[in-house]
Image 1: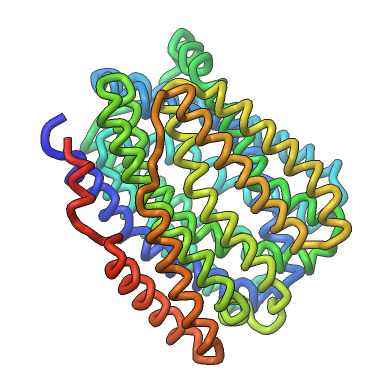
Image 2 (image 1 turned 180 degrees about the vertical axis):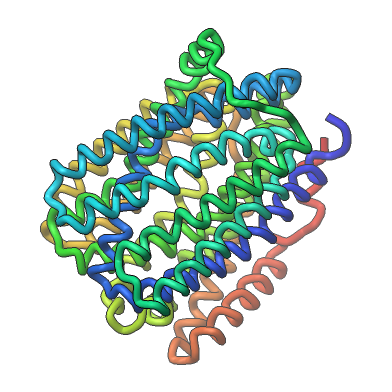
Length: 471
């Protein structure tokens, strides 16, 4: 590949980061408006409906996006044919999954509002799956600036619709429906942009469908386990606790989802490179994993450490005083998401190296642990118990992923920055604890400055480290 890995990944990541910064701001604004309009119970119902439809959504994806990106990264000439078949296949699977979700919701102990919300949430779900089939073109070519722009405009449209709904007091169902407006806008823009890169048209070639499904199902199973793992605790909280507590936990989880935008951006850029390098050059693959790992710990650790201090102020600022009870769950979930940065890197590395079976087995072990432990923890300790089990589950995934990457891929992630990051984060958290009564905005800015200065003083911001990413 011409040029350096640094330039390719840096531009792809930076372009997405700019767009995702806007998505993050819109997401926070949406949560602020929605929580104050619906209250904890209403917000809990909305979050529960979307968590359920997204958990089942892996049945419609079955790993197709990952396989298509991997295959067209290796053979760009197949782009139109593979993406065209993936479009129609995903549409068919998404409609079948939506039907399953509607039936399954009738069997769960939810009220009428949640069941109707599941159906409404299915509309953006279907549109989003079709859109992501097109995004595969940009991901394989490291051109994620374009879908990032489409996503930003779509999120803005969704937020505008939400403001209109709240202003006119159109009610619960209208709030749920605002996501569909944004998804439709995103799909329209993505379709227009992809026509400049490729010319996929919906196709139903049975041999291609069969080939895609055979390749995708093992990956889809691994991704399904990951998605169920990510959403299961919210569903279990709804089984044992009130919608009010579901709302508190969902606010904490929403904060975590927004933070998880960063590793998602990086892995979107890194995955096609890993898929190629694990075939061509183990040395390049090792450098790529090391660089991504250092970035993830450099960002995740200070978020977890700072969250210990500022979590109560964050939940009040976003949700209001009614959501103050979410603070302890957020503290724990911030540790879980810091670990998830690393476990996600290991999981994607295994899939890129065609070791999805190993990723699936590890995911099943973690899922089994998560389910059994939550059945004990949630009835006894509520949302704090669920958050604690999330941390323990991620520890299991990180440890298992590290072992598998070494054994299956022959690579040993170094995490050379880890001790510097831990020291810098400790300095930051210690100072913030002394001035914790200061306004939240001041604490956030101070935390970033303290951590950056401490990491620089410890040699953790040495630009020469970036040279390890050179091709």
